[in-house]
Length: 437
Image 1 (spheres, one colour):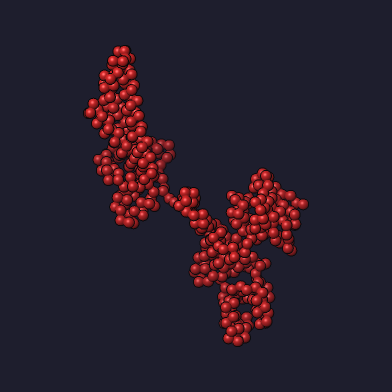
Image 2: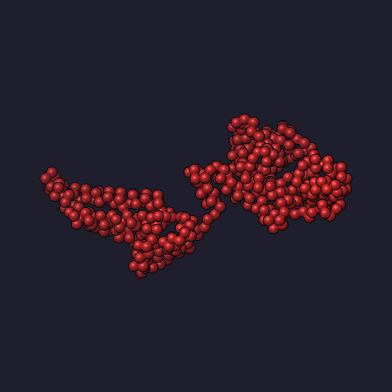
């Protein structure tokens, strides 16, 4: 009896080892292992080397599991059957004794293997994959060396069969932005990341998809100085519009001759010097960027030019807006930015309605209303652009659109420009419908 129990115990331990090895190897994360390598953990480096050719590892595991399963079938049942038969002999008839003993032996061995060789090792491996993988890496390297001829043979046969079905090549373990999004979302859900940290990381990736018009100050909101303005006019404009920098143009905004810093003008006033926008000491050469750049590329432009202010031009070299480093940072920080630092463009009136400025970037509207995507969003940048594109006309007051369970209604127009929309939650279907009142 002792020998039989010892045989079954050894088979269970061997099966548990291979099962835990398989799960721990598959579940261990490369980033975590690389951190351990950076900390000087030699076993982590060996494990990463094994992950370069995972097929060899899993071949050894498969050979081991199948060998143990066959031995368990041969030795396990026959090891317990005689003792179970002797125990049941006083209570069972001779014609039933052998069948019942074999059945109970099979059930007992199977239950032991399912519990101790499969379920428990798998759960432990899933809980501590990296720690367990570091424990098994050296024994598995030894088994790989011993079983190398078998590994070579079985891998070759498997590769040949897969090629017959046009399945070849190895899985590329690359981390994509979607993978990072998923990890960040999981971290926020588990509490490892705060909501603000989650939002900040998502905004970082948005910099590669959002273009300059989504964050710039639009052309019609730009206050510029004319190079022919006298000192009194310059002071009046700066006093009424206290910005840090101003465009200096020749008659019209599209004829830019430079930019001027308010601090330089203030310095002239303090030193009681004459202010003239024709003076080269006041004018600076502006950074010009196309309106097709992403916000990430805009940051690169700011960094390369050592400037924090840029004029945005379209394909016809017309000024469509201006953008500052602070605009990009506001986009990056999102809701983390104090409401006193940025203009409030989306005002929630109650649980089911919002007032939205027409120039609000469509990405901000999507975030505020929890809308996954607007139709044909590549054709516009703002919520006003969405209204114009969908209505197929210049909107007028009371024009409305039903989309994604919301009603978007124009409530204020200023010289054909959509100033403000009222958005209300409705039970409407998600398809786009327009009504021109």
